[in-house]
Length: 380
Image: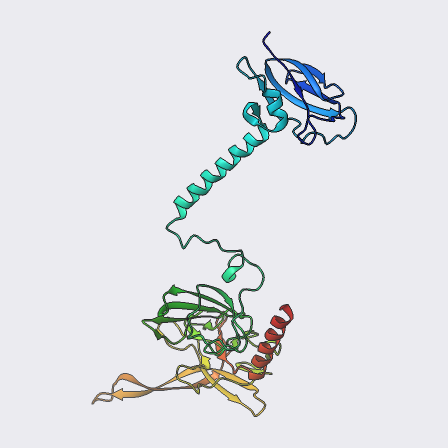
């Protein structure tokens, strides 16, 4: 069997003089074959190691156990062409004949990481400027607070693309804006952008800039700011009451709820409101009567309201008035419709309802805004 033979002296502090340590070397193969070799008291080792791959360990039999640098476990390869200095090289750090499995593994991992990096660069080189974004930057990927617009922020200023929290004092927003609303901004350049305002009471509006010209706010219609009347028409909404024959349904009144009473056939009272919103502005409405398929109302309505804002709704049968037209001989030719009067009181038809729109309490709005702002301050 081919072997490597020779003699070396294990030195201390790079000198062969005054060596006071005896070192035991242990050579182990993967199959369990084991060889032990000891130095003399003066550090000299005579060895004859068969060819093969050996994992080498050692310890000091006497004296300072730090006589050698820590190299235990590094593999020493001995072949017929390995020079006699191989063990000496191994001891003093020349790795020409040493196979380091850990170093090899890390080299492979590093090469793989470099390959992944280079592939990522190739696949993403056309996106952005190569920077990565932390979770939560510009409000992306966070369930906490998005960036907070400053009190002085005005919506006419271009924002970086992202998600934002609206501050109570920010200006240029819709009148219903409240602290804690959200804003999504997107666009390119300083003159072309759009922002979407999402309120905490389910209202939605958009503003945009085109060539630096900023639009007015455009509010989206939804079930939060509109109602569908008994004829299927969409109408702007504040507090709404649907008046049926024996009950009401309502929305948008906050904590103070309207109270319903049926006083008699076709006579209904609604109290605990600020009264009907009687159309001070163009497009406002306050009462809508159900119609038949021909567009004719099903009954006549009269209403009154006292100083306490109690609203009385009266519904009547429709009584049509005709003028009789006769020919020269006095024969009745036809009846000419001349008008419609109130007939007997009648209840609202089953399944149909009268839509009523009421004023919104400004104090309630102010209190709600104050409550939302207090909640946002408490979170910060």
